[in-house]
Length: 183
Image (tube, rainbow, N blue to C red; front, side, top):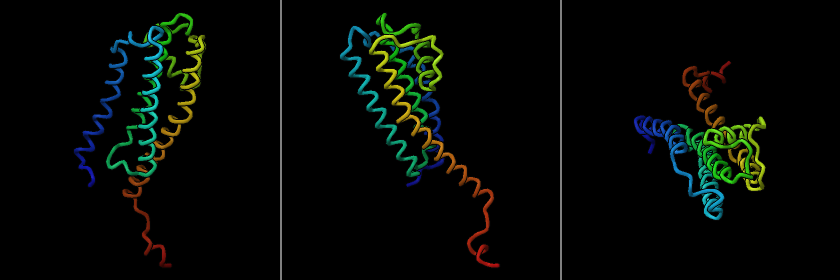
């Protein structure tokens, strides 16, 4: 059963509203539970979140590649990429509570900035991972970006190109098979 235009619009609005909601949660949620005082819990939650996120990303990528989104607007992958950014930012902020892990990372904005800079592979050098745990998380983020987020971005691009191509063909239909055979 195909979704109705109304349900598609509702889903789009929900996905679009989710991005600011995730940012609000990131900037307001108390993070005292994570960090050097609770390493077992911190690493367990981090691993669980990355595993769940990878599973969701792979599912979304598969749906996009099979073109079976059933009216979903292809916003799931970008939303999951934002969620990945926030998970890594929380990890960096939690690690920065240990004085030997980071130089220059003190606030949530610093952590989000460092996460975006790391994901984009720019690296200005104003914030640097010094400790072993911080370096491990940075390496994980780089690998995560290369493996999951790049493939997810490519899948969204392919999906959007296909949708734009369909719309262009609907607006400007070319000659049909019967027109091509005559002549």
